Length: 235
View 1 (cartoon, rainbow, N blue to C red):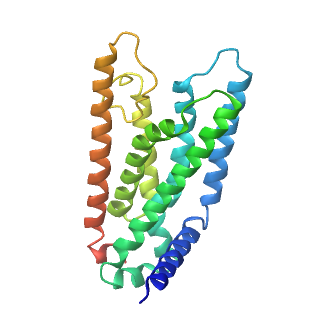
View 2: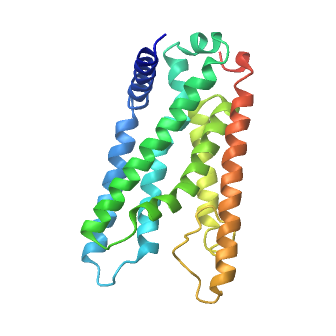
View 3: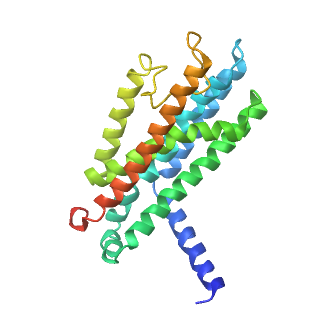
């Protein structure tokens, strides 16, 4: 097969999976994310205090969670509902390519939307480094996406995985105040430097937090692929 034909097949494969990602209820999560972002942006525009990078980070984090929520958790469930799961799992190793590509496309889409929201923030509120902001956001968002993917393969039910992810998120939100400056806080804001902590110690805490999030993301993805070897558990 010629290189041009292989490239065309790859583009068709990516285009088909993008259509699957955008199918069903994803558009509602996308609308909700932009609605929340625009609402928070409007509040910041008319508030007396001047927002800083720490405020922008917090305003972008929740929309990012909404955007990754549906395509990651309902990835496998949508194929099961359309009776495509048995076909995908019947082809050796093909399911790894399909779901890894969809996961990568979902994360890439998330990065693009986060960049768009960050640029809107630059024009509407405050000048920030767009790529640095998105880079910092992706540590937390990639970890949550990987964890959601893992729960979807463990529970094998999208609704159950979604409920468990909400519970985990609420637990960490409740603990966000006592863990505000701790390396164990998955929502750690890198732009909110504590006033009672030296900058060198803060950088050490931040680097340890990022290392744990990256390690957790890698372990979650690998664990998900191992779970998907057990075909009879899904079909």
